[in-house]
Length: 251
Image (cartoon, rainbow, N blue to C red):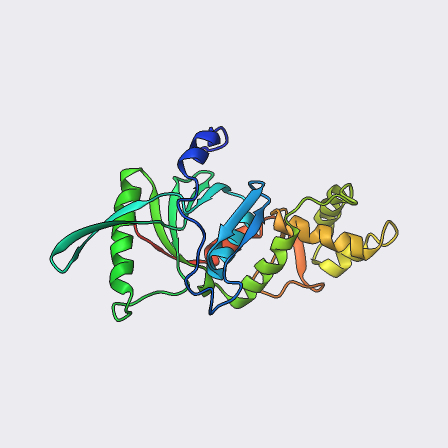
């Protein structure tokens, strides 16, 4: 699917958040809810758990993600309760539009549940309803477990996400960084930063290098701690990240 010319204003009206961000455990787990500033969409995105927050970081760094809507739809649920048919609505976590892909409705979970878990029946009921809801609209439905991602990858993502914002100072150095990196073999971050010492201080270069990693123009091994010894090259880091996430597709 090509989403480059999509009329987003109509979808914005359809997929506004269907309920207020809330977390029943917030009394016991402080700071579990909050918001991030989406550089991709230029707006504030709220989350109900740190697991959701981590997945939104993934989306912000994913070059294929064009747009995403949190708590976008109300899925009708029917359940028998003591012989009485009852109805309510379930709100899945996020609807994602990625270039070249059909829309995908995601349910974000901290861990996989088994039939022995107390909340499994409700979880399974919601999944079946979301699967049908997505199928009827030509979407995919996926349950995803961001916290199952490698811990080193997670820490790298939390670091990289801080550099997605466009650099205002010394922005003219970005083309020079990429040019030099193409010419330098087996280049570390330290070596690349040092190559600019005749022009400006290293402390101005290093944030630009991280920015280029964040916007998918510099490759670094995401499975190793990113530091001054990290080897760099021109290319995409996100493909590794995409492959590292555990998903359970239910379409």
